Length: 287
Image 1: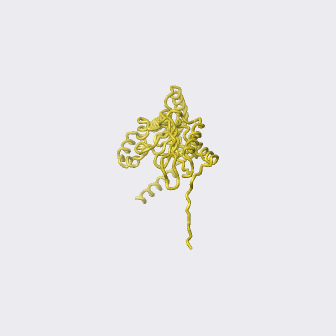
Image 2: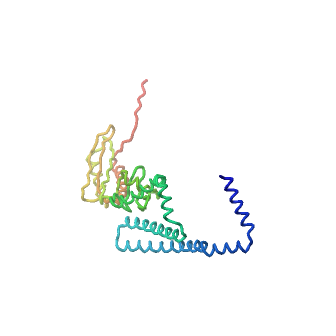
Image 3: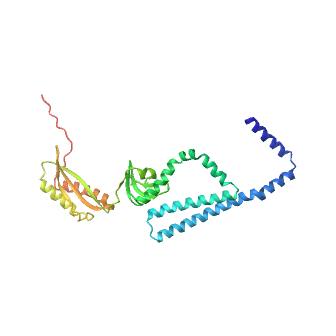
């Protein structure tokens, strides 16, 4: 089979080389005037069409924003419209180039099983994107955790959702995994509770410790008055008494309150001579 192909190519090359130059030039000009011109025009249309699509999608997105459409839906429709228009443009160009789409469809259909298996993951992610928009387990701007990843939702795309971590790393998670798996949405509720436990020595006055913790909480401007805070003993440990502090705040202030309480408690305990026990071992040597 390979020898026949080589022989055929060789014969065609010899045939062309034996043609007079004027005939070769005539055939080339005829090709340029017919199909060659179509190719050039087609690429020009593609170039101009992509520019037009970019502007159309931009105006479409601006229209959605003026209508106060949810930012999550806006970004998804932006990506969907852009992909759809580009596919339509290339189908039009293929038709203009006399590429029979019926034959292309037959080819796709004949290889449907293989293509379906190859695109199974992508189709699952595409469907997952619609499920996320329909159920709305989260939206753009929410802070979520799924599996080993957590971060702020930057975009819900056609196939992937983009998360930005606290240290500004970008994570791409397939929509199929998000729509079928478990996740925690830390921004779903307006309020969150900050739970912290502080260990103090048995030698400390527990009433004094409780009053110090209450004073610290009252000085926190971001702590909500409703629901009320909780301060109390929750355990008698082997070497410490455990005080638990529970305060409520707006979801966006969670880490501000969390870190501030840790810092203020340590400073106040030092100032009030409240001992914080730490692991230690007493060794007795017998002689």
